[in-house]
Length: 313
Ligand code: CP
Image (cartoon, rainbow, N blue to C red; front, side, top):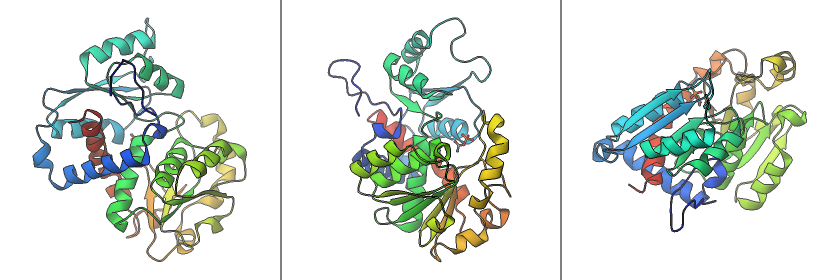
């Protein structure tokens, strides 16, 4: 979906994974690969450009990889941490974002509620990038696709199992982003609606994309997959649910026995931060099959590609 706030504008927002067509994802990955292989060619690309970064929730990778990436492209990033006070001290989000878009060239934000992200897109006159909401994590998926392509040499025709909380933001972005690139996705999760992907999302992705999307409530769902993907079981803001989650999720732990069910050359991904010995064992996370640190590095390369693409640089 292209958002055209002004007549004849070609401004692009990435408020969710649905804002990027599979062809656009391919373009971004191509730019990211070029930048990663020859960073010196791009060191002036963003000269004079400013990225404004807003966070309602803590971050290590998103915050640092965006700033480092913008620096490496010759631009500048400004961090505005609003973890404790929210965006709107005494003004509306709409007013604040309208002002910020007069200062910066791109706004990247991590917000608690996806509705705030949509509101930011409506108010901004510069591109807005989703740095994670409770519904989507599109920058994570771009990095994941870049990593999969590097490790497997292709995307189309692969099989990925997303193991754990099938109802979370990273699962949704994996479904949309991977199925869009022709990867078959199986979400392996507890048999509870709240821990399974939204059925409407599964239907929509199956209709829209060449990769299939299925849900399995058995760990046998990882049999024969090329990639196992994993995320934390309890994210920030879920403390009240922690007891139930810690009862329901353990049989979906990514451990050596589970990985053995997949293909011999299967690799393991985790968007990090990880809770070792909870959703993933150290034995797996530190094994040769784990690509989690390369995956985290690729946050920076993929986001550099995304920023160059979004500003048509
Ligand atoms: N994966 C991820 O988004 O990491 P951060 O929460 O540290 O940004």
